[in-house]
Image (cartoon, rainbow, N blue to C red; front, top):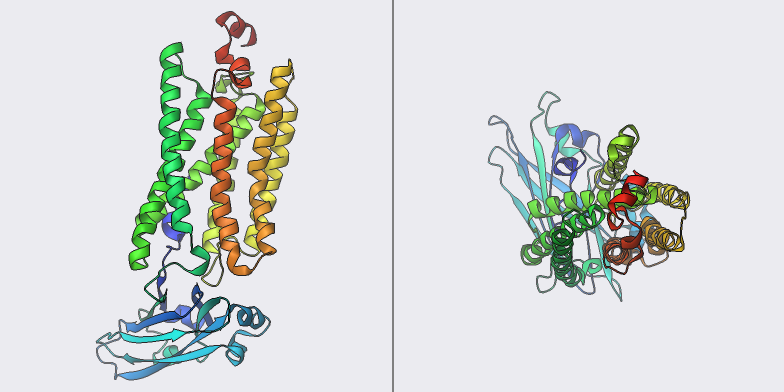
Length: 420
């Protein structure tokens, strides 16, 4: 329902950013963010630009366009100025000349950026305040495009920006741990099914979540492996991993809320409450879609992560509302014994930790240096999701767990008939 949206709105992780603008788009845009890159030393740049679909009968002209580079502190100051007056405080302005003719020749500009004592975070912008290209052609000419590719990289060919340092190592470890976790828990699930002759649906749910997490981390690993060598990565792997992450997150939310309602403990048959549960699944899917759309569609290259600004705050509010609803639902369950009470107490802690982790990480990121916010929010979310999955495994798996003693599967068929 929601995963396919990524195919159309995903901003592929890459330090070689290519954007194409029509004349109609350029007429409405004065200032266009292109890319961002952090380094502890010199940053190299390569800008390649050309004009596409120029008519054969057009008399060639030269177009000069301006690119403005801001260091992080200057960029923050520039936000208070109008877009077309920001050039007054830019750290660096470079100009590129493009031959506008039917040959579509690529103009390539190379250079270096260096500034600051500790770290450099550069933001590149295309200044289109003079609208020179649009003035060259009549309004009837609509199929002409300006293509701009910008490649920022560190000395030695390092493709990872400063805030992404360590990302590959962390993803590698996560991929290994989740693959091992999936294999181990699959064996446990298979053993339980062979022994009792019936499925443990909660464990199956957890197993699917772990499997999706392992697949997502594996795709991320190979994407980053290629990305580190060419600055582009494998877009299909990135988009697929983000779709899987979205589904994984959805299933994790759904499992927590279903268990909070008493599924597999007080009831098993969904058909009894079909009119209620299906709307829930739909609502959770819509919420997950909102997360994807807000994060991807509204972010731009000047932000350190997709949840910067009001997008992150909006998502945090949704998570906090879900946390309250989850906690309330779990608190309403009938505590028939100490085992049941202990189980729901642990469930409330683990589930609440999952729902509030993103808002807490977002708040922490605002207290740190801006370039560190990526690691706090993005990597922090990855680690917290792994921790939550581990806690769920601990909660559901094992003969001695409270869940195995109170769930319907663990009861005799006579006791099940009394409940159902």
